[in-house]
Image (cartoon, rainbow, N blue to C red; front, side, top):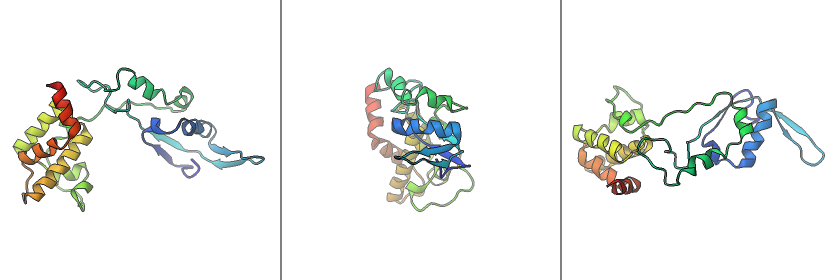
Length: 198
């Protein structure tokens, strides 16, 4: 908190922090300083920050997605969100729910230019669209997998990276349908979901 004084403190996966850590945020957010009081001393650090936090709706991260049933049951969302106390939520002025980006939303035309990366694993989403854009048949399969198997945006990018690597191993300049199909076959949870839906 003190190191972020007059700046931004970003906490990702907010409910994953220990309850004591989250409770310790309350006083600095209210007063703008962090007080440490060991034994007979009292030390105060300036901590006027802008807190930005992010969290999934539940532990599995997919609650509320159309056609998805949480494996943890109905109480998953309530239990997970209850990890953030009411007093802490009261100190967060803006609370915005951002809908998940589906893999189908990411099947876009390639961009004209993108920065370079050392390996396929280093490619971000925009660069992947340039170096790993599948051919028409591969793109169709990817779109079908996104819809039928509930492929998340992260799952989509990981599948495309693996497909690009498989194409590299085959010495192919373009990712083909066979590379996308093989990459999808390596996603264990995707296969389990497909079998459960069948």
